[in-house]
Image (cartoon, rainbow, N blue to C red; front, side, top):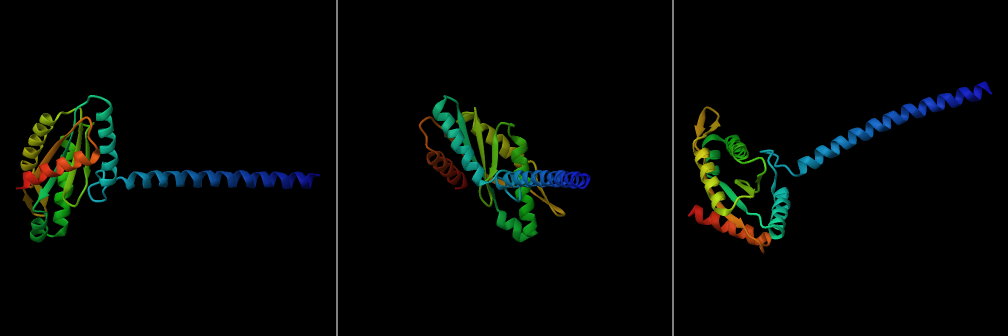
Length: 191
């Protein structure tokens, strides 16, 4: 009987130890999954949200505007001359310019606004509770701040030039309507 109790105690101790190891492994996997899920929505270069997350956000805001009478707007910001920066200062300088611009954009908007990198040199900003005229004013201020904050590119600094297009998000809009108007506004700004 004593041998049987000893075997049961050893089995229980082994099971407790194995259970603790399994719990630790599960916690590690949960942490890795959370990190992966967070990185899926992030641009690898700038750490801003990416185009995938932007589409989810613009869908949410368009649905909200269609449900409640709140003003909202979308702005596209495109970095001009990225290829020239890369040719003159090297590929890493182009990356540095994009990182600098992304940092400026996120620091110049309200904490409730949304900033994402949606293309190689294109960023999108979504403003809730901001009408189109106010969004245009905000983007003018942001453009002036970008011009006054040159990017450090190795031993040199470069003043970044951007083109900006804005579009109001209106009741009755579909996501494609808003994206098309913002894109058309950006094209007009570039010409």
